Image 1 (cartoon, rainbow, N blue to C red):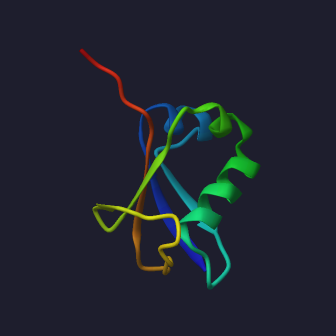
Image 2: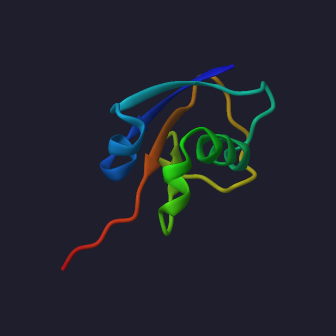
Length: 80
């Protein structure tokens, strides 16, 4: 299946776009997505944390994905 991923902050810089169409297996979960993205974009491995939101809610690693999900990569944020 192909999913659409919205990218923010440093993830947008690493991948070079604000949106990404990404191919996954039909039974993919959030953990597989994250592992695949880190393999395809090794600079993502350097981030101290990376959250994934699915349909406007933070996702658990074992959450199954579908082609209609709205996925977002949320990088670490610091501020004061």
